[in-house]
Image 1 (cartoon, one colour):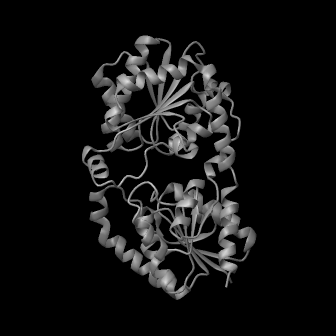
Image 2 (cartoon, rainbow, N blue to C red):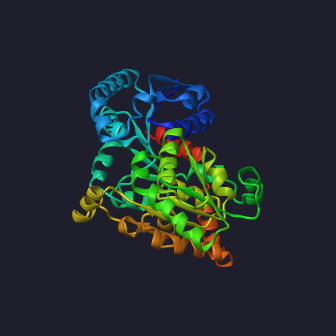
Image 3 (tube, rainbow, N blue to C red):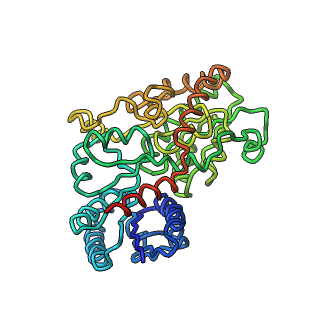
Amino acid sequence: MVCIALVAGEASGDLLGASLINALKDKYPQAEFIGIGGPEMIKAGCESLYPMEALSVMGLVEVLKHLPSLLKMRAQLYARLLEKKPDVFIGIDAPDFNLALERKLKSSGIKTVHYVSPSVWAWRQWRVKKIARSIDLMLTLFPFEVSFYQQHEVKAVFVGHPLADMVPMQVDQAQARTQVYPDNDKRLVAMLPGSRISELERLAEVFIRTAEQCSKNAPDLEFIVPFANDKTRRYFQDVVDRLKTQANITTILGQSRLVMQASDAVLLASGTAALEALLLKRPMVVAYKLSGLTYWLLKTFRILKVSLYSLPNLLAGKKIVEEFIQKDARPEMIAPALLTLLDEEHSNQALLATYDDIHRSLKKEASQEAANAIAALMDKE
């Protein structure tokens, strides 16, 4: 019987893993799936040997606190997989946990795949040597990542991005608007200042002040801010209350995709949300701030290897959306760019055509493509 091992470390990886398991089942109907996964992977048929929550540790202090138990779990998992000898091991994201495990498994003769490339092409490029020693195959979500790995003689296959498969090529803005904000007299701006408290600490006031400046010039604007959890929502709302802003700002839980779909423009922190806004064909402005020390280290030691930061610009290979990074992430710079997008809707057509081209390039039925590449590796003697 074919045995396939997978390890995912967080909710996004759990979704990827579940979809991948279903695609692999089409090729190997009797396959056994084991490893570490969340509810979606378990529902798809994976036996999770440890709770996925044990890997979902964020922040340096938290990681250090849990490090002994994480190392113990990885050693135990390695021993169990060595005994089981799966036909392939697939590490889904979670590079800090998975790459070391993959390296040991590969040296023991087990084929290894890593699904979702770390941003090694952008910073800390020396990690590619560790990756080369750890895996037989890298599955990338973006096409530009493959050429980087080829330069370093690491076999990589671009499989497309699952989000591009999920979001239709054309979305109905009017329908989304009736669900989110049925008052058709106002223009709607989706604001996504980050999903973590650390991001909000750096960006919440910047985004609120930007909304305030925009509202002075365009009183018909309504800003809706969706949050994944109540903790981040409360933090942001506290900042809104403290600043006593006159801008029309509403915070809600969840529905970030629907809010972006309904919007006339989006102001967001750099990250996956920028890709989602692109797929939804929304004009956007991107702003982001790292901690001062982190940014200084990246620039001083030339660890950062990219001049563009947001995914739309990286995917286009040029600047197609305005991005304001670090010292440039100021309301007096962001607000005019956002107002320009709102006031010159007709001139956004070329931008939307570029979005469309990028969406098509990423829409490849990622899970099926990933399953094909894994099957080719498994079948290769």
